Image (cartoon, rainbow, N blue to C red; front, side):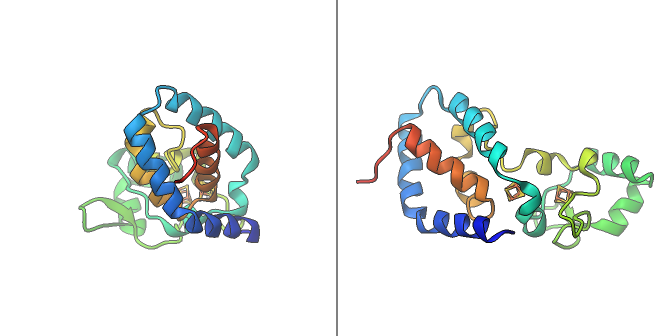
Length: 167
Ligand code: SF4
Ligand code: SF4
């Protein structure tokens, strides 16, 4: 991860108490245009952020992998689903499939995902800042702000949009 992105994460951590207050306010006021605003901010921020200079999610988070994901990966690798499970996956404490170790075995040293077109749904949806009913994802977003610099920027821009000031 670049120094610039590390700095963004550090600043996000410093502002965590502000974010908690802001999200409490969001939960209470439930702005009607939240999903539209988030969709715009997501596009704006990901036009600037270069995930290939980061890959922090692929290096540190273990995505939940569904049976459908396994089939897709197997077909991408031209292998049997059972071989994919055996080589790359384990069952975690929630009884879900996850990669046996992180960084992800499909993350290249060039930070490219070697199965990008067939990556798990959880990877494709991360960091969920453009999801519908974003109001339900506020706690998850706080968690993701400790990993993803794009989330930190989105939160900052969202607070600016609603002119939220901490008291
Ligand atoms: S989604 Fe976030 S954590 Fe993952 S590579 Fe992009 S900026 Fe980094
Ligand atoms: S499968 Fe690809 S997108 Fe998902 S964690 Fe691994 S490298 Fe990242």
